[in-house]
Image (cartoon, rainbow, N blue to C red; front, side, top):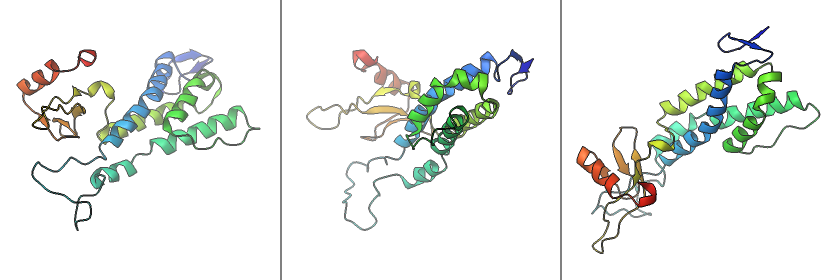
Length: 204
């Protein structure tokens, strides 16, 4: 009788129980979103209104947030998931050459399509499940959150013609909901209620 390599529950002839199979599928779908969300933090907040910043000035702001770049460099997800894709293919089709780098989303999608074979025929399925859980925890610790955390579109008026910003707003690592395009912050309950009230109908 085979048991789940993660929790020890009896599974018949599978390496993972149903619960941990579902968890692997969920994480494979979630990791690209977390990775993309983290990348959004690379865009620095705009300069405060009235502050003139020129692209050629000495000491001007870099085009990306260097503090967040260091966090991105700590993100192991693309390399780790790629290594699992290479190993699964090696075990299942030893006659094939290793797949070329395809990006995190493509590698997660490929592993997801092979999940049934993985849980029934891949001896390292438990190790794969545990490492995917670690990657999710690491990405969340760096500040990444999946799309449902988004609050909507910025409703701030950005000029004297009444132009509405319209960029995506969401909570940052400090939990303050802000627009990364125009810099408007929605801190109070009233601010958040107004933000939600004025969302476009399809986003409300």
